[in-house]
Length: 412
Image (cartoon, rainbow, N blue to C red; front, side, top):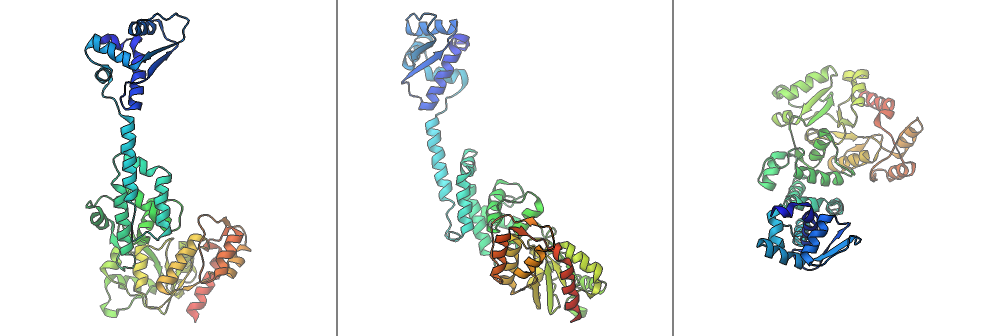
């Protein structure tokens, strides 16, 4: 059979393999060699028994004839010969049918009675089909992941109103039986984060771990209760002499106007109860940092979300008994954050009106608005104006006004 590895047979058998894999192994049809070499010409003449002049540039032979010649010469037909030479043939039609069946099953697994009416869920499911993600999952044997992703999302929906976030390993174990199924970078975590990004109104999943952690926390899951933090200034706590260690630390820091960073672990170990009639919430650390420098202990209680509020931030604010005054960047994400806060905590918007936006625009350079639009139900004119202007105003632009608000609030 060594002869079959030579120049005369090599291209002919390679063409036969391609044709048989494409047709599922049927011996119908012909094989064609273009611009054959002298060795290939001799092989074809030997198969067909007919002379072909050297001027003929295309040689054609029936597949069934090749099969008969091989059986007579080597005792095995074309299919067995090809398998012996270069391994078993693939059955492309059967593979395509199996792949299609896998895609259909994976797509069926993306159904959810709990989430079916959610626009973000529909967009996520459609995107997995549109960009070929489902096909890639099926091809690499991960077609079980769509069902697991839906299970994770349904469980997150079930804990959406819980004051206690669920640790990510616990969520993974309950949804999949594997505590490590949602570790950073895992295929399942990637699938779920795509859905959570759409739910949060963002077009893509953040590349950095901090952004991904914020997405998990926005849905009620905590990757790490030490990494989940909230930055505060002048938060005083109830409890008096019976106050726990974290409350005592906060009271001491407030006496000197020193910013303090709380972890979710601390807030769980020592349930802090903020003691304030009014508590202010900003988005950017620059606001809190300048408030500490300019106002110090005179600044009213101030909490900085540093973007999307973390689980630690929510745990702290859920215990606040006073009124929350909330603001964020004047961009689409900021509107969503603020609307959620007003709905969740009954907060009052702080410098988040169309007039505030208009005055800030007049102060100078701004950045372009990006991402999907969001409403501003507390002042519908704000979202309308932002869509018209197409510009975002970061919180730092309003620093003098915000500091004056904080100073005046403490005086009164």
